[in-house]
Length: 129
Image (cartoon, rainbow, N blue to C red):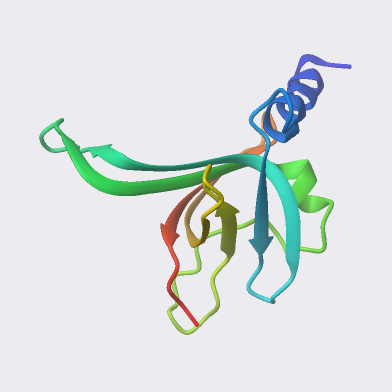
């Protein structure tokens, strides 16, 4: 096994192990309505750094990190990405916070790292139909 293959396997242990790793239940829904339960890393924080001033400001930054091989093993059509058209359905992401409050987000940015096999998505709160 090469170093990249070993790193991708380690990524699975880090992102998908809910006992000793960062694993957290995350549900993805593609624009066609296909849904897949996955395990990965989720983040939802309220303090951001203003790039113009360098000062901390109140805001909301949510993101997920998932293993690409786990996404492609599902019935989802492609990898999550931003759907810019308001008339098209977006990729949706659902997860609970640490207090089990459920939130639904849409993908606003998708950054696949194909060297290690990880997809990171920036999210924005979804208040659609």
